[in-house]
Image (cartoon, rainbow, N blue to C red):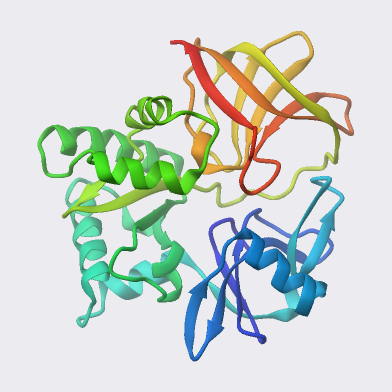
Length: 308
């Protein structure tokens, strides 16, 4: 089970997997869709939590590893496992496609023409489960680090050539509004534009994300120690686009920051001074880290560059 997969239950609930592997035989996840009249309807965080609390409390779970309350599905309760790579390959071989699927296939073939190996690429989000609407974005997920970085460089090239485009003002505003992040609009766009992990294809927004295929939960468990805001220099950004993203810090007490929200993935580059607001956690081995994205909305939590 990998992050960005979706899992379905007999009750008509669709969960997005948020952490690869299992904890106590359960997949750690979050309810994203419910089935009504044979259609998948998206639910927000409050709707998801309230529904499970009132009707399906067995899917509410306290993770001792994360020291956090989250949703979880026992492996025996999974009726269907939706996998991004399989879905993309199916769509590449399908003749009858809707407008969103057509744009996806065009994008995938464009990447293939520029030497992106599609066996390392999948599609997640609404398209993965066939719940897309006309306004849906495309969410590509990569399972090979070199392929992901090649694709980011390729986006820079194709945007320069105008084969693909930077997000326009409306797309940036829509993206910012959905994120509800603790940066102002100008800060958000400045950080995002330099990441080259999103662009427009035929006017439709798409995102790139990276998952370590072999990732399993580590041996450490974590205990929350309270909130903190600090500034530190990034000394290693090797895993800046991983899930969770990680930035190693030059700090006497905090070794690194990990980020569980896509808003701050790839947010900083080695050598930059950043400000971090998040939750301090102490690992069972004694080391301390800051977590950004300790809740789904990450309210009051952020990473931003102070000096590039």
